[in-house]
Length: 512
Image (cartoon, rainbow, N blue to C red; front, side, top):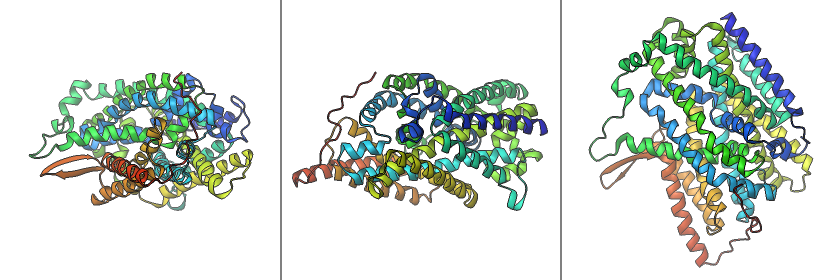
């Protein structure tokens, strides 16, 4: 593996250099939060396309989607419709959010919610939800890096086993601290070129060793290619699959790193153009999902040289094992560098987004309202370090299954901010306290559904009149959230409880 390691290290340090140089790219005053946390909102269509692509299609996606197909078959393809559904939503709502945020100087979605509904508590809840949902997402990027580093035999034993991961974290933390959102925006261009090259090469080379695509699908059991027929009085996996795709699309739009990437664009037209062209990534994601079938047919989990990896990481080791089995060592190093760099980009964006939320909606709003503009940026930089440190400690100290569990919970939690953010873009009708109450009930209901399934699944089997309707718990919880919001708004209005003032009335949203 010396050739693989050499190529890997060369590309890794090249990207590290780019990360540090990013602070000089498109120069701006990085002592201001808008410049550090949003790149000065000067990214055009080209850079934004790579930034959002690197943000939404992460290293863990590269590992997890084929792993899910390898282990459970067709269910893993839910990632395709959900990324497609997401872009029409982005096309409609995100330019509107960008326009209001730019006019008012908002850095986060919580800034918008707080001013729209004149409610610091609601802004705080949106910020806390965003941070809680983002932390395990960052941890999973580090898990993806951990799998690749293990495949490269990087790291010793005992105390030094995790040294490479710690070093990568320190480098990530350093160039994010200095360059802010500029660092992942620049690195994302390299990352995506590496990912595209890896996927397109592997999708041609590996099937040639497995008898072509006809030979691959001939050896995949029908149970892994289709869904079973639903049992009597149940919609079976069909509603679970459909609602998981829809709910995941809505949830992903609410994540702080998605909103941060959008707000970094230089115009609402840039956001709309990216909503049109980003589905190109979904095409690559579809090819990537097929890696799961290739790994299954190749029986990589039974090969002696890879059994240790599967013992430690389970199906997550399927992609590294497949690449090592059929590709030359130098290209394995190239591919592994693509995965690790694919973890650095979203981890950096996520840490910046979480730091923006902490600084604007917790520190400035509640702890130090008189903080200066430069003080804001300084606090955000420090907060980004603690966010990444927390994710690293989580990965090193807690089993991977708990990181996955919390990430699944994160999707349930973050979608509870949908009413305040999205409905707030179009109407002031919901009462601010009704939104708070709906958020609370939705959070409790969604968490309780996941807990009732021992946090092993997010598909909740709701029984109505003897019929079982399995569906994504996040959507069930969101429906409860919306119901509570509507009823509570009516009650608060009848009681004439003050709804506050709309702080965005003088802003006219434009789409281009």
